Image 1 (tube, rainbow, N blue to C red):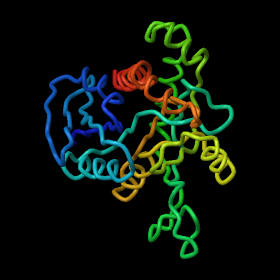
Image 2: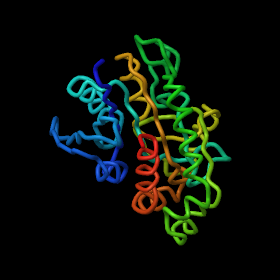
Image 3: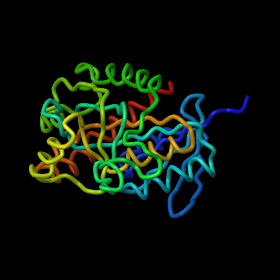
Length: 252
């Protein structure tokens, strides 16, 4: 039986650098101005890469993982802006499904539907999502979290008892930094828990190629006026730890 290879993606270096650092038997291949790191996490062979930001960049990178490295599954890990009122900084969202909230060819097709595919939502891998949820819940236990992230950083972002949710994630080519953007999306798609810029595109590529996809997002900000400050600081101090711990424990 051919060994299964899992692709692990982030959008920016900080989202995957911690994972790359712990790869065993690591090699690097450059394709299309992106560096793909091959190696092992435990006994699992993986390819790790950051795609750069946005749906086009993510789609191109996911396609390379499929066509060049022949991955059997893609896991995308990174940060997102919280949209639902109960979502707090430090929470983790695992996508049940994803929607491209900026897709609109109406009146030719219904708003948000992907033309010619006749799909609006792209589902993720339920078995993998449930497995990931168990690992994340263990990591987010306050007693465990405090051993991984400095107390002053947790206090700075008001991370006390973070939670993990499985739900809908919205993807689009814009960074949310105003209440107007946030409120507009809440009214249009009230079930969306958070927003980011890559996940739905990766999920669509995986759907078209018939492989499972998992999208895991740590909430870095509230998708409002404070988002740009929160995002940059959070990515540097917190999300890299989340990403490494989540992936490392998943493949122990």
